Amino acid sequence: MTTAVKRACDACHRRKVKCDGINPCRNCSASQLSCTYNAIPQKKGPKGSRAKVINELKEKERQTSLSAKVQSRMNGMGAQPTSPTLAPTAGLLTTDMVKQCLEFFFAHMYPTMPILHRQRLEQQALYVDQSLDTYCLLTSLCAFVLLQPGMTVPGTDPFSLDNMPGANIVTSTLLLEETIRVRKGYDYMDSPTLNSLCTSYFLYGCYYAIDLQDKAWFNLREATTLIHMIGMNKETTYMQYDSIESSRRRRLYWLLFVTERYVSDRTPLTSTVNSFLVFSRCSAAAR
Image (cartoon, rainbow, N blue to C red; front, side, top):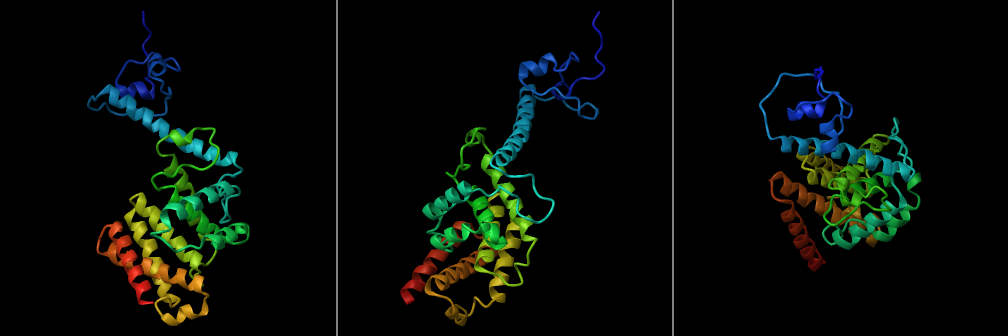
């Protein structure tokens, strides 16, 4: 006589199939699913495709596993669990990460976003542990670059994250959250620097890429407010800087200004970039 099973495992219950009560049960073993009993018993719902349910369960487990693997990979490179304070997470922003993201940015993105100077940024990166402003710029830049087509998770990857869909998004999210957290540890709005303005722009780009429009708009409006607060809309402001610095500040001002105007009118971002390029050419011709 077959002994009745008092409770089916989570996967069998979700699939509406008979569970043998063994851990792991035969159904989970055959379908390569985790055999758990975490779900709270609920009323029965309408039946669906069992194959679809299996795929949903596998995808949920894959996402959970992916997030854990990315964090383990970061820990393997020396990163510690996220600090409860506002200090940078030790080992999260690696030299290899910065190097490859900078290489990708200046090779593929600089023509449409000419707001950074490579030599000066690389010099600042050498002393990133001495400046929270520089640290947040680099974490936001890496988070932004990792969301671009063709960019892979940098470094030796024992977990084969390069072949797992979503790895870049998870890694980018870790860096994005790091930027937001560390930024709370200093008053970047009191004396805005070029780095802090660029950081706000890259945060806007990250949120825009993952379709969080409200947060994207907030960071863009914050940046455009700051550039007016420090007088970047006045020609006399640029006279105190050398040619390289003043050129970068002009480009950043017009990139933020044009982007904010077009986004406020709900115009596609490509139109913003194209308009900025047209403006840059006209400005260069006028000079």
